[in-house]
Structures are given as structure tokens and as C-alpha cells.
Image (cartoon, rainbow, N blue to C red; front, side):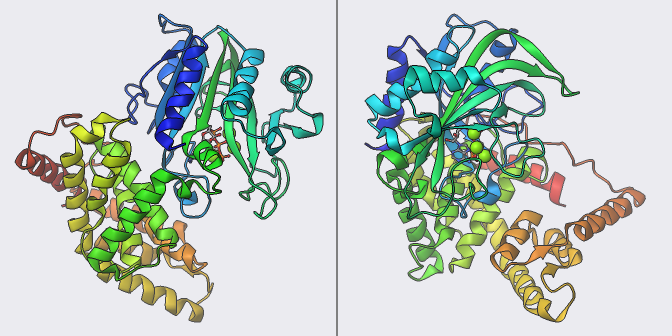
Length: 481
Ligand code: ATP
Ligand code: MG
Ligand code: MG
Ligand code: MG
């Protein structure tokens, strides 16, 4: 089954269980200042869970565009390193607004996985919140999962491990205990079961989280019971696709095989000279073209603050990975075409805005290709000198600052290069330099209050290159000059 069919099967299954199929909301959340980007399917229903908003349905199902590249959920640094993380991904979800609760949610999930998708039961593992006896009993007594395959996990406060069975959208908002379903990709892959010391390996991959929405957490961390007990679930489309396509990594599913091939062709064309098709850098590029394209569709353009800066950082990271493989001229923009082919039928906004996306990325590439070679030379030189300095594995904050200030290297890009060599960046030193520069600018009366500003231009319509160029250069002038 192809990714596009799996998405549809999920939505059809929940439609057959009385759920309204609702479209994905944009990746830029409408009016939620607590959120940089949409990070879960439940975001568009936040006010419904809180009881502030009513819908004509009490059950819904979605395939939601999500970005986890900042804020509480940030997977940017996982991309290229794990088999299961993306910056942009699709979260399949089913929701109950005061309708069904734990028992139906768990039974729907089990039916979909073991009957519709026909996954072998012995490959599935389940976690429940340590204090949630009710969920434990549903799994073991009603569904019939063996008790040794249901692992109790706490809320991670002070825990040594990353597992967490109490889900929160952010520091405030709807939240509750959850139960998660993991798939065992087999003993040949390193990693232990959830809750074990080596759970961060990729053998047992979390595919589905079922959250029992019960509380609203306020700024002081106090949990207020929600007006109605509800359900919010999230299953990564790319992760379930990997399982159903009998591959281990998300990057081996049909969608990514095509994007990675397109990334390789683009890099080779730009000077890559038959780059290694298995390079993790190609995965990073294929991941990032999705995140960049979908944020541009929703009206963000690269800038120096807020969402625009996240977009700039992701774009420049992708460019740096292409550069590492030998690309010396813009290449990243040309992959957009393949993305539109892969995902345009599910997301027509990609088709409508293909030209705009391509052009915005191309302009950012042209800009960054002017400085990347000199910046990389300085960075390489600094890293090669490290052996002679103390501490040997830390890059000087001043160099990171110079790269940022003169060559347009975001700090996380420098850190990404350094990480490949087991080198860390002195972030405190970097921050000191930043502060010094701010103080000087303020003293000279030139401080431009750039922080917090963001491109507010037309969100969905591409009205022509000239217009775009002038909008963009005005905004860039505001920030950069
Ligand atoms: P992980 O522990 O693997 O980082 P998570 O616990 O942070 O995942 P949830 O917040 O529970 O993830 O999100 C629900 C589901 O969305 C996950 O079970 C997974 O299938 C999917 N998912 C989460 N983060 C990502 C990501 N960065 N890329 C792809 N899929 C993801
Ligand atoms: Mg995570
Ligand atoms: Mg998890
Ligand atoms: Mg989870």
C-alpha cells in the first residue's frame, strides 16, 4: 500500500465509525500565540476540547500537516539521525469531543491495526500511564493483550528516560494520560522497549498515541478538569507506512524514496558528481523540502525572526547538506516539483502555489550560496585547529557568532556541522557576542526592533514574481541591512 492509500484507509475506517472527515488546518496556527507551528492533529480542535467552541459533530478524523521544528516539540536535530523523525510529517488522528472515551478509542485502534492493516499482534507493544489502571485493564481484559506486553510508564518528571505517557500540547492547554502503541521492527535493530535504558534506539517504534484528554493545564501548572472527557489520537503516517511497506525507516517508504532520488538528481546536477545515494544528507534534504514548502504555502517567507527564521534555518540547513555533497549552485528549489507530484493530490495547495514555493526557495538559495563557501572554509579551518586548543572539542562562540553575523550561518547550522565531527559549540560565548552587538547597536541608536516582526503579506495567493520580489526585498531589507 502506498502512502496515499494508507492515509485514505485511515480516514475511511474512522468515517465508517461515525467520524466526520475534517481537512487539515494550516501549519501556521490561526490565532494561537502559544504555538509556533501546528504540532499535532488536536491543535485545530483545542477550543472544542476546552469547551469554548462547538462543532456540529462529536467525532472527527483528520490527516494533519504538522511541523516539529521549534517550541515544546522540536525534532529538527533528530532528522538524519533517527529512522522515525521528520520536521514536517502528517499525523493521522481520530477525535472524540465528549463522545466515546478510553474503551472505544482503544478498541478502534486495535481493530484498525490488527484487522484492517492486519499487523501481527505479537509485533505490537503497548504503554499506559503508570496510574491508569482502567486503560491497563481494557488492554489486558477486554482486548486480550498479554499483561507483559503492556508497559506502565510515568509522566517523565525526573525520569531518566524519554518515554512519557502524559501528553501535553505545550506548557499550557488540554492534556491528559495516554496509551501508546509500538511496533517491534525486529532484533536485528538496536534499541530496547519503551521505558528501558536503550529505548531511544529504533527497534521499537512508537506508531500511535491515544490521549485521554481530561485536563486543561494553566500557566502555574495547575490541572483543571475539562468540561467533557475526550479523546485525541495521533499516528504518524510515515511511521505506519514504513510498517505496512515492510521497511524499517520512514525514509524508505515510497514517498521518501522518490524525494530522495529527486534530491540526489538535483545535487548531482549542481555539482554533486554522483553523490552517495545512501548519504544521510539526502534524507535531511528530502525532509526539509517538505517543511519548507508547507510553511511557504501558509504565507511564511525566510526572515530573521519568528516563523520566518525557522524557515530560513531549515532552508539553509538543507542547502548546507547539499553543499556537503558537492552542490555549488542552487539545487534545493528544483526538488519542489517532485514534492508536488508526490503530495499534490492530497494537498492541492501545493499545486496551486508551486511557482511561489519554488521562487521563494530559489531566492533564499541564491542569497546563501553567496556566503556559504567562505563560511564553510572558516568553519572547517576552525574545526581543524581545535586539536591544538583547550577544550579540544568545543568551537569558540566568537567564531560561531562571526559565521552567523557575516556569513548567515544560523547557530543550529554551525552546530549541525560540528556534531558530525563530535564537536560542540560554545553557545554561551555565542550569546555573549550577540548581546554585545545588540548593546552596541542600541547605543548607536540604530536598533531596529526587528525581533517579533514577521512577514504579513498575502498568505495564499501568488500574484507574480515582481510583486514577490519587491515584497521580499522590502522585508529582507528590514531585517538584514
Ligand atoms: P517520539 O517519542 O518518537 O519522538 P512522540 O511521543 O514525540 O514521538 P507524539 O507527540 O505522541 O510523538 O505524536 C503522536 C504520533 O505522531 C507519534 O506516535 C508518531 O507516530 C508521530 N510523530 C511524532 N513526532 C514525529 C516526527 N517528528 N516525525 C514523524 N512522526 C512523528
Ligand atoms: Mg517526540
Ligand atoms: Mg514518544
Ligand atoms: Mg508519543
